[in-house]
Image 1 (cartoon, rainbow, N blue to C red):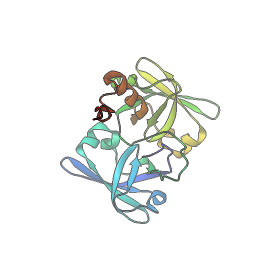
Image 2 (cartoon, rainbow, N blue to C red):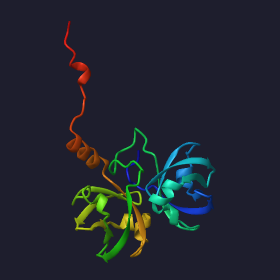
Image 3 (cartoon, rainbow, N blue to C red):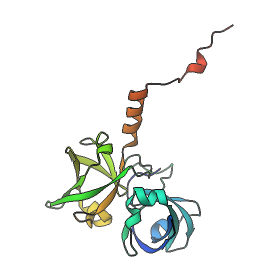
Image 4 (cartoon, one colour):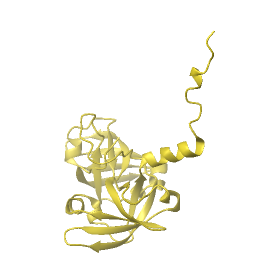
Length: 209
């Protein structure tokens, strides 16, 4: 599990393309400093498993499903990426519950600069619109953000200087693609409302003899 608080801006060092997969080498000395084989690291909001590492970075395998359903398929050598190590049980919970499971992608539609902040707007896929609410949480390229406005097919967030400087969102231009993960709690609530409580507690209904 992750919190959506980006720890480091990494760089794509190399990409080895297979028939239906790819191996990414990510340069990121901070997150690589204590990683181990099999550790989970979120790359632009996608939870990936470390297959090898050294002091300067790490490598991950990316399967066809991930390449097709996230923006990782369009990465190029030299691109910057948001990195976050899996949350330790003893850590402060600074963002919101982030699983690293991308629900869909969106594109940047507008950037409106303010004094020291910026409002950035994105497209909102129909399949995800019901999970996005004003003042609710959403993960954009692995960054935990608060939704500042929602339209019929769009949403906006307000980015503070730290987010603009220390994540890829400060560099995204109109038309660029980003990964979205909606609040998992909203999906669970929807499931319960649609299907009801199910058979929970059924084992306790047997009559006593």
